Length: 517
Image (tube, rainbow, N blue to C red; front, side, top):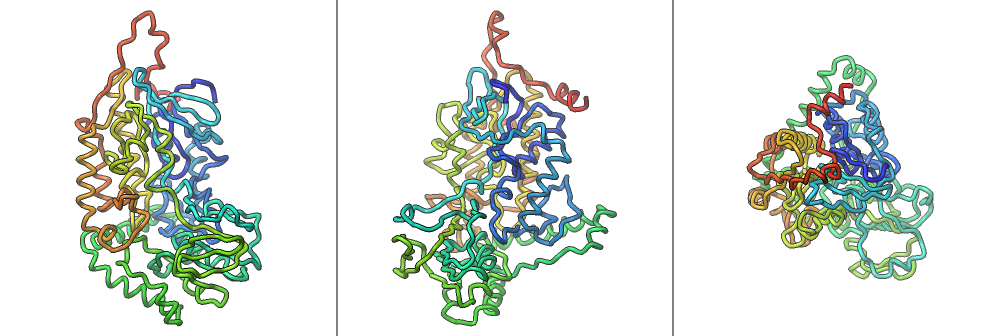
């Protein structure tokens, strides 16, 4: 990376959000951008999570970009390797490789209030950018609980998102900590091979059957020959989930019917009434994400599996001790304990106009961003999959594409305003937007269902989920409302110092001309 390189836009991360942003910038005629990726390849969470059984719980044709349909998905629910392959394909087809800077972890991003640009320090050099688009995602930094004695454990320890493929689990005594989306895929994948599997379960999840199947060659051929069939399939999957939203957001009591189906699903595999009682949640279904698996319960019923209805409290040598006092001797501990979602580490690296980090700005009232994208005090900075943009029942790609619309219009507005200019979200606008979101959140199943989930921050506030349909969010992010922003102009530079000023922002017309060259 050239020292002090200046670009129009710096995108952080190369998962779905980052690659989507790059594609959208090129479509807008903007080629003066970089994608900064801390790892050695693209893929984001679908590169990092390579544990046994890793797959998506959203149907393949909905978990892909609308502008990059894939007629060749091999299964109804794709595995990690197929999703990662898809993202590599997107990077190639849309000619993104020249823009991607691998092994370039962002150390700090600091706003220059005089020059109106971001100074971005990375592990491979420093650059400046008119606009920063942070697409690091909420599922990028694993969270491992602080367990007394863990540092003295003589065996193997790793998080599901940092799977150690060199460690052979066969014949080992394994402790699986956590019962979230990763754990219910890992458990049935490793259960047949391990000598003993001890599952530490603080809160049982609601689990529904995974209606997965192979997509046959004829079906894929049809999608290739008649692209509208792929669009139709995607539309049907989307429509069904849009109709389901009302039960999650306005009428949680209707989810009782789904609970009965989930209990029947459990009863088919778990015959032991005592085990069934330990696995039955006490909260309303949907309060935590509904998990999909047809193999999790059968695996738990096997003779070499112990379900401890308590969290891991302590490690004493090779002995793991649960909060209820039960103990087990193990050779390996696997943490499926989620990620830093409501306290994203990237927030500590963003320093805004007031000299405070984003984390400091959010420390009192929790994460909040105007339309899930921009934060007060951080001009020309936006995030993809920001606060209250998560979904509990549909595809995050839908939300990402809506935010890409907002990003594109944000850059357009800067071009229209012209010159050295920035847009800073008004604090009043952020507060008003967040108030509306939180008011709507009060009646949702995520707030009323009686559970403690990773959707909630340390103060019990839901700063993660969007309390509406994807259609509502798309309408809310279709355009940038300039009344919600302060237009910031750079101080006039004396003529004798003009040559020292930062490179002027390119106009949309100039960038489009370059794109077409």
